[in-house]
Length: 275
Image (cartoon, rainbow, N blue to C red; front, side, top):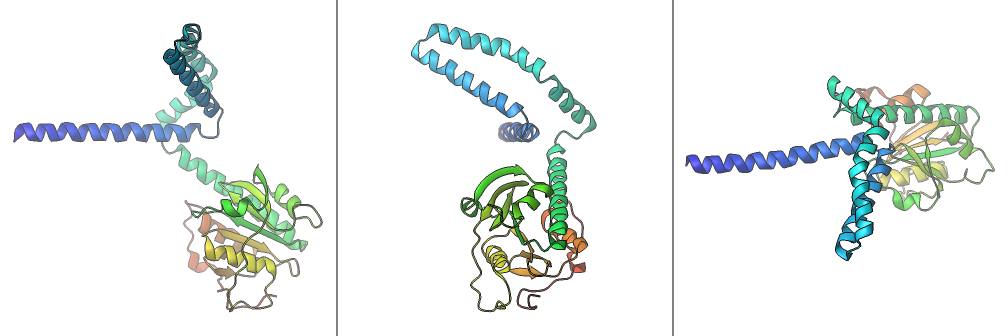
């Protein structure tokens, strides 16, 4: 029995070892995501692939060149990416190495929300119609493909310019994916529910339609009244102030928000007519 217990502990230690290695790799990938180090990894992969191919095919000269690149490349990487290594070591010393990605995501969420708030406030005061859908867990790639792909940083200035009347991209929806404006002038499915008030416009029907088939959060600015609405899970929150819109967006989107959603004014989409 002692030997059996020892073998079991060795197997368990190996499993834990593998899991920890994968965890470290995963967190390391999160640290370099969106930085120039990603391109470096791609380059290293290409060099290793060429080295392997040259060994298989017997290309001695090319193999020697790749071997030198690998040998001296390690030193070059340390020199070129010295600031990144120093930052990672500083975060390790502060105990924040593995929490950086969480803080980074929360910071991006807040910037995106503030950009939407600023743009919505501007457009509502001037009665500029807008439809902004934010992807959550359910993918929206099929709807992104119906529009003009942008893949741009989310900013209030860009959102406002997209929805300015009589511009090429103003007709349709903007879809935000991973904190980026993925596409504009996208077509969203209109809700076919027979309970929707006929006074609801196309933007509201499209917002409700996409909320019925995905878990996205969609912000609507009425062109007729300038009122602000939001849809989520086939529910319509209407006549929102800027503060209420911010509260709802933080509740629905921010992973760190501690807001009590019961304090926000809520209407089911069947409950109130469009003004």
